Image (cartoon, rainbow, N blue to C red; front, top):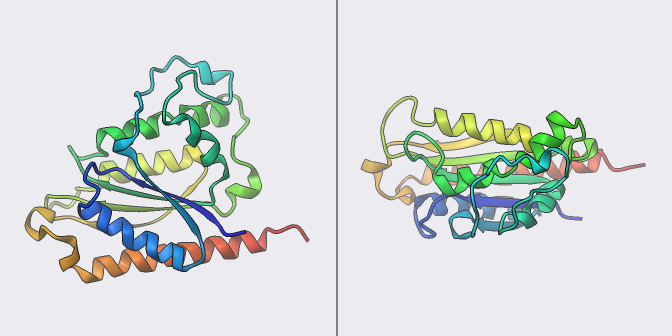
Length: 205
């Protein structure tokens, strides 16, 4: 069975630079034989986590909205792509709220000591981060990377690699940086290859 990947677009602009970069990574991972579901997070109807701690004792969330179906999907996926711009030195609101709602996974893993992802599945799951920033500053991606790594730890989908491009206020169009577009494709393809190989290694004899 082909590896199942979810690609999360955090930008509210479906045709913007972040989306263009993600398209290349998705094309690469599909060429590696994976199936990909692309999710435009800003288009989902969701509420931020209310910290009601219903999930402390349950394997789901007390809140029901467009995030709800993703709990089961995130238990079963083999890999994840997160594509986001930098906003206020971090992840934009809709995507951050989506990620925060995975308190369900946090409670299961760290409070109940009953992770929602199986040990076998955890072995091969990987995440690729794609991010663009407007400013030409050294620490532009620090907040995005820190939040992404925390999320990856919570959902047991290891942070694997990233494609990062700052200075977009001057560059304007990401397609004028073919080396960056190629990096997104190549890393998408490579992640797909590695996930497929790792899955094959862990097949029961």
